[in-house]
Length: 214
Length: 214
Image 1 (cartoon, rainbow over the protein chains, first blue to last red):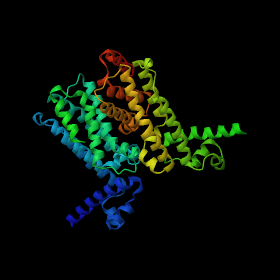
Image 2 (image 1 turned 90 degrees about the horizontal axis):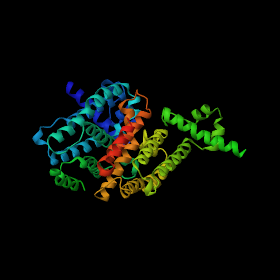
Image 3 (image 1 turned 90 degrees about the vertical axis):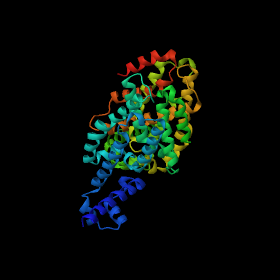
Image 4 (image 1 turned 180 degrees about the vertical axis):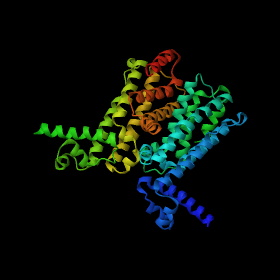
């Protein structure tokens, strides 16, 4: 019994994420989700009181993903290649959760629980991790900065480009489906943000990374 | 008669813009707009067939504003101070049209006329102007680049930060009202994007500019 229960719960989360990404969160109701899964609305309500709870659960997964991406690395493992792999993973992950960023201010304003969680973690906890990550790159000799403020500003710009990249590309060319190529272009935009801070020893490796995304 | 007609038309556009910015475009109907203006729905429909036409008209104004901002400057007038004034004007202007960027992909998908206009101008016409502007800065000796691609990537990153700055700040701190200070922080983020490309002669002037935004 417990096993089936967990399975349905997970299925609801996984399939809701797909529906939200495809049609936008606002267009999808709990009735759409239960019909899509072939379960009764009552069965869905047994697991989630409303759509907002499903969105919240998806957001928790996104958070865990970002936390994992930004986790401090051991110094020896910070190489241009590792950075490239990380960028790949980051843009692939963002693509999985893209509905969250189509209308983030609206989504937060309609979901108080989500809003509280968002500010308890993203703003105060995860955003500083991006700065710490860049400091780790500096300690490993990959990047060099002239002040902590330079690091903070770069961290904000990277955060913003990563977060809104798919919304930006979608509005620039709505008839072109978002693809792996879109993610690669996003990764190159982030590399372009970092390039001015790459140490002379790593310039060549960085140029190669950029070539890898073409 | 013609004078009154123009006045009502303009009033509808101006007040709709205010309502969209305050409550989001989706929450506002033509009935809200006519009630807010103290005119009959019939009077509103005399000027605009539907809300989408009002949004379209506002978008045309936004376009004219951006075109003006990005217009080529005479070389002698390109100075750090002029750049700073331009950034001020840009972020103030973006603030005036902020509802457009809360959920841009959604807004475009609901408004085919807007979508066509958006792609006829923003993507193909205005976006390249940002690159041309940076090339003008380079010719004036303010910035220096090692390749055209570097310019293009910087242009895209600036475009993205300007476009999504208010949405970014709003999601980071929804209870803090967006203010002039928010725009100044955005301007500093754009300066941070440009700083690595500032020529040695202009480094000091750029540091002063940055101080002006604190």
